[in-house]
Amino acid sequence: MQEPPRLADAESYQGEAVPIPNGPSALLVYLDSAARRLTTPWQICMIRAELLRNCSLPEGAILDPACGAGLQVSALANALKKDVLAIELNQERAEMAAANLAQISTWLGNEDAGSVVIGDGTNSDSIIKLFETKKQISLFYFDPARPSGSTTHELSEMRPLLNEVLDAWKNHLNETDNGPAIVLDLSPRLSELRRSQVEELIEERWPKIAKTWQWASRGSGRIDRLSLWLGAAADSQNERRFIRIPPSIHSEPLILGSGEHSFSNPTEDRTFPRKGEVLTMLDSALVSSGMASSWLETVLQEGDEFQWQNITGRRPIITHREPLSFEHPLDSKLIQASGRIASLTRLPLEIEHLNNFVEKAIDAGIGKLTLRVSIDPDLQPVIQRELDIRLRRSNGAKTGFITRASEGDHLLLCVDE
Ligand SMILES: C[S@@+](CC[C@H](N)C(=O)[O-])C[C@H]1O[C@@H](n2cnc3c(N)ncnc32)[C@H](O)[C@@H]1O
Image: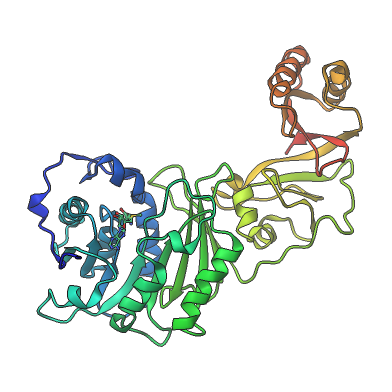
């Protein structure tokens, strides 16, 4: 038999406070090892809060029906100056969340005006009855538990289940002309198929609701967070958003928006890279978000055009005529490398042919050449070391890289721009 829901008491949590992950070191919160693994880094909590500050949200409380240690809901409620209704199945973690809500509210100089409930997030009727005045919801924020080793990322793996939690709270959500405000924090590995399944669940309940998919990355080509922003929380201008999270918590993120995902297929009708063109290797997280084309329009020089050479894998590549021009400090973090093609060769990257590459590099004034191409992982460090040794004597002032635009193509020697 399921226990009836009850309010969690912040005083009951007895753990030791620790500096909040990825946030100001003076802000202390309560986390055990399991909660630390599940929790949203503070920098991301605050970036999301800032994005929501620009939305016109309905009145009411921030609902988090699976709040974990409560960091995200506490950030949202404090930044948006709203009441909290947070629910957590695990008693100890719910008490931890209540203690965190109090800590974070005090730190941000706000009254602690929220409630954490120990209970099942789908049990809305009994939870609502705990309060004297009827709770109405401004924003539904949901970050379900997921099995850690999942490879399929099926919606049936979420706890609580997305469809059940939506049905439980649907009638409690206040709405604006744009519908309710909903943010779903999903697995960053969700495939296109799973994404469309999520959209279907939403559209069954709110047909025609505005949607913004948001990819967030800390770099190295990895998508760290994938979320879906709906209704009053969506960005009406953009169906997709890409956020490059800055390395420092004191810097601003780079936020890119784009209407629709459009790629020209790089394998059909591709013109092969030519000597003198600029080759740019893009951040693969940006490319998988589908937003590379619209970002490129902002950094290509006037009159220049680009061609996709490769959109898949760890090294998506374009070619163009002129160097890219960056305005935002994080623009340069959206490329892995960019260089002018100095020569093309059919020779394989093997020790016996290495002098050929070294001579071409010296001719191009290169003193340091980096391998940016897939080769046998045992051979890679050997070849890289040999190139370093042989080029050290050249005194070339420039740097460059070796890559291949697409499987089966020539190898390209590029001088860094
Ligand atoms: C990914 S964590 C949430 C992390 C949180 N957003 C944060 O920033 O710390 C998901 C939580 O959902 C809880 N949970 C799982 N099933 C639940 C249910 N039916 N009702 C309420 N909470 C549930 C888990 O115990 C877990 O703590």
